[in-house]
Image (tube, rainbow, N blue to C red; front, side, top):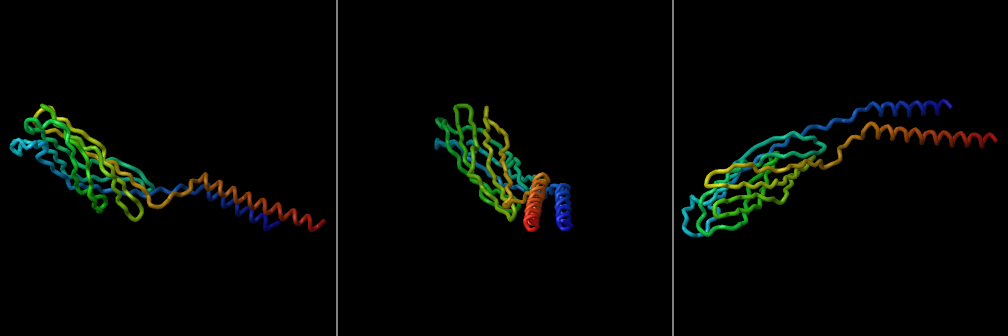
Length: 215
């Protein structure tokens, strides 16, 4: 009887301890993003002899940014490049939409990969525009987490000859490589309650056996 009482008290103490255990806070991760930049010149050349310095130009300046995220996972958006689109004369009969494929270096936490970009240039009679549409998502693998980078589409429209500005951004998703989630107090209480129930069943069975032995 004394042994059963001790078991019950131990289980009750265990359950109480589980109830007061706080949920562990996740460590913050500092994510550093850097890009090398790019410069696309001579866009819209139709071979009509227009001086090369008068073709459309798209420039993506290099940039650096940092973000703090939760080590259990999260996402953020960061500027990849400040963009400058210079609309100029592209030659008579050069109207149309033309594909753009180019790349630049993208560095996340010291790891560098090539970011391949897909876009288009649309040349009108008086107005031009350029769009960066997408990329093949790239993954940066680290010991405890992975970072996925996906470009957000952007378009710049020119109203007349001159320089127009916008930003190329990307969405970064941080994914932990292993499940480091700590059980919440409610879950732990349920576990303790289950253990107490098992102990009660064992006690009932022993009592039943004791009665059979005395009959």
